[in-house]
Image 1 (cartoon, rainbow, N blue to C red):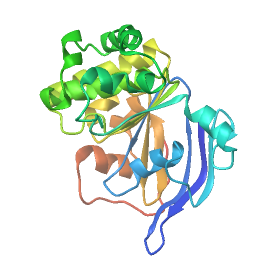
Image 2: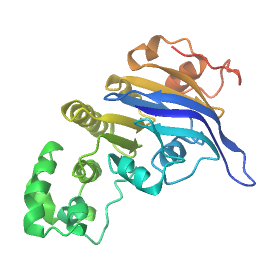
Image 3: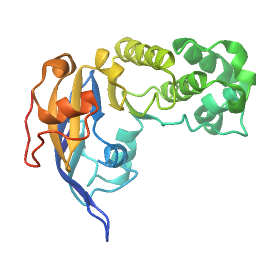
Image 4: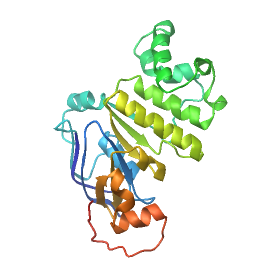
Length: 253
């Protein structure tokens, strides 16, 4: 379980990004975090994984408050987490085998020792073996996303954070990636936290949280989204720029 309690984040000379984020992300489920651009969704992920420190509040992963834990405790918890970046974040100077197996190679394994493990993980994401000798510039957007996901799976995470995993992809490839994410989440019993603007993800997610005005304005089961009368959800899924929104709304499903 990931528990976020009264999280606040502001930067000097800037507006408050997170006014009061309180959210429980269920274990073994896929939760999608949505909201308009500029609401701090990716910033929230970076605080959860310790890249950015909150201004106040608590973040508990497996009941350990990582905002106050010792470095050794925090490192032990975060080793169980994987992060899939928005644009895969592969290194252009390395081939796909080196990109996927980088954690093994840096840990001292030889390429011969790492190869069977890399082959196993690319099979999980439906990447053909012949791409291992190629470089990122030679792959399609969908293959790059798969390679980034394979690199994350190689660390055996219990929790995976996805930051806009289908950004820049066409609708067909987007659906294929979503299907893959859902399949892996069930296969490995992962806890998945996804930042996304693609409405198709609602077909695969278990829960949806919507952030607006620095707070969680909605949290509920994904299957209830299309019938929800929450004004923030109504506006978001219909792509409206205006609507009967109230700043103090805090409705849930």
